[in-house]
Image (tube, rainbow, N blue to C red; front, side):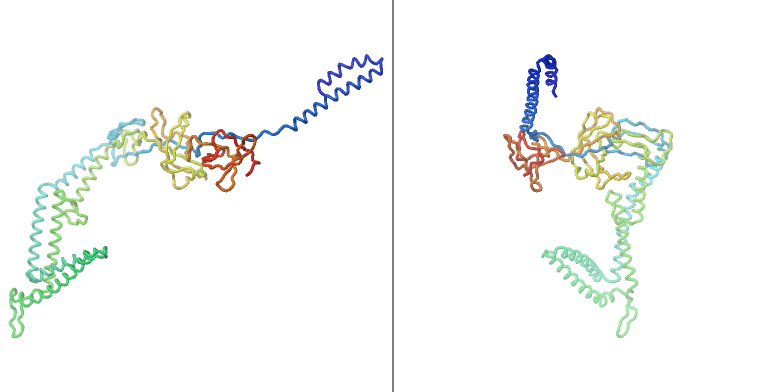
Amino acid sequence: MTTMSKSVTSGLTGKLSSLKKYPGRAVLLAVVLFLTVAGGSIYSIRAQRAAAATAEPAPQTATVRQGSLVISASGSGSLAASEGIELSFSTGGQVTGVFVKPGDRVEAGTLLAQIDPREAQTSYAQAKQAYQELTSDTAIASARQQAAQAQADLMSAKYQLEYLIGPEVLYWETEIANGEGTLAQAKAHAEASPSDEDAQQALTKARDFLSFAQDKLEDAWELYYDEYVPETFRLLEDGNEVDVYAVPTDLEIRLARTSIDEAQKKLNDSQDYYNVLTGGPLPEDASSDALVELQQAERELQDAQAALEGAEIIAPITGTILSVEAAAGSTFDTGTVITMADLSQLELDFYLDETDWGLVAVGNQAEISFDALPDQIFPGRVTRVDAKLYESNNISAVRGIVQLDSALDGFELPIGTSATIDIIHARVEQAVLVPIEALHETVPGEFVVFLVENGTLTQRAVEIGLQDQLYAEVKSGLKAGEVVSTDPSNSP
């Protein structure tokens, strides 16, 4: 019973009691009171039922809006220098000075540390003196004289062979040797260019000449025995039928040919040596003792100079000293002495979940937030993605490097500072966006929505672009401000 019914009943109780002395009236009044209260209750229930019958559930709709949509992968990383360099001495000794400390910024060419250079200086002086003696003006004059003597020896050896076999034979043997070389070159050219008529003609010409020279050599040998031998060599026996002369033996002729080959090699070596001493290039096939000695002296001088220079550590770049592992007075043998890096070019070594493999590629933009600077966002770009997953403690991850777009000027962040990173796979700005719930896929890749207009639903085809878990980019079919149904019960 409602509160109002209770108050009415209590108010009338007294009146009923006062009417006891009039029994007829009391009964009549009680009947009227019951009907009044009951009628009010029945009316209230009917009104509630009528209101419930006319009420409809709130429609499930969304308004198409305009905004940005970003597809990204998030991970973690740490700050690194893009050009970290480990520096060391190239020779051992006692460290006599270390002139920098971690955090110092130095220019390229700055002396960073050194060891006692006296032993290296002595070795360098000795190597330099030995090399200078081999390349002095006196050595050059001697080499020139040796080349001239080698030329004379070669001419003498040729004269000796010419005497033994005759000038005509020697001439055509030389022509055949030259012709064989020409034929080999022509054959190689013709095989490389079979359709080249000039190459084929050159090959035919070379073959013809070589055949001609061989015929002439045979004629020269006949003249040798018929004319040259009787005119040149003494007669040993005057027979009735055959005259016997002191003809050179095969061994003598072979030795003469060998003398020419040796003289030619000696001439080549002496000329090469002289050319090198006067600034010419060193032949690749150089093998003479003089050239080998010169090469050895040059290498020893280079090594001694490197050892002397290695007694100092010079900054190869402009950068910041990250660590120093030696001190004045200590003895150096091997290992890194100083580590430096160019902190104007910083990188981030990053790690992503392996499920994000398809969302990261070289060239992707990145947004970096360092734990030490949570309110700052630094842009960058992916410069490397490892070709295989990084494995550690049964965990697989995508590993790569992001190059920061600018230096962290004004921020004192040490190498190794932790950071979070978002790799931007795709992004659209000022796009028309619709909730995913409003899309209905009719066939793979094709979608419709239900547009709400004047209380009715109208089906409309839309072209969809990027999608995330909440929204999709509408390339065509909708515009910002239109209302679509998100009721899943709607279907095409």
